[in-house]
Length: 126
Image (cartoon, rainbow, N blue to C red; front, side):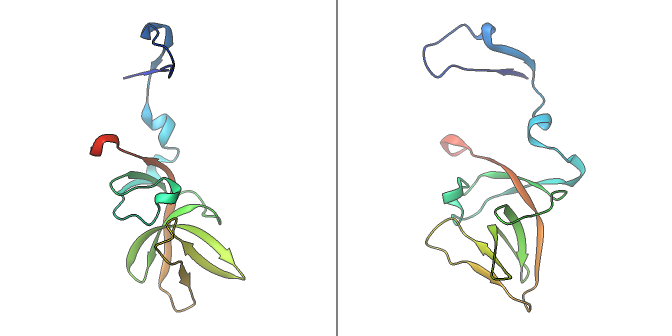
């Protein structure tokens, strides 16, 4: 596989833009032993550009900080949300106004599985 830059304007001979072999792992995965993939189900994160059917690359080696999109387990259920802290409490925020934030209180069974580093969006329903 080769990486090629493609102009979005007028066509140009492809050979002028070839950069050499492409290793997607080099571009997408920084901690191979700590990286996993998840397929998105639902539409709570569309405002972040994450859509139903997308493939997410999740890195468990990264320390989650507020603002990160994370994969979390809340009371036994997996969810994808944006990590937020407010007044000393943790919130998981959706990126769709049709969904409510998830407030993590001391009684909540909660763990972060990893930080979403990339979303692979499939065009044409593939």
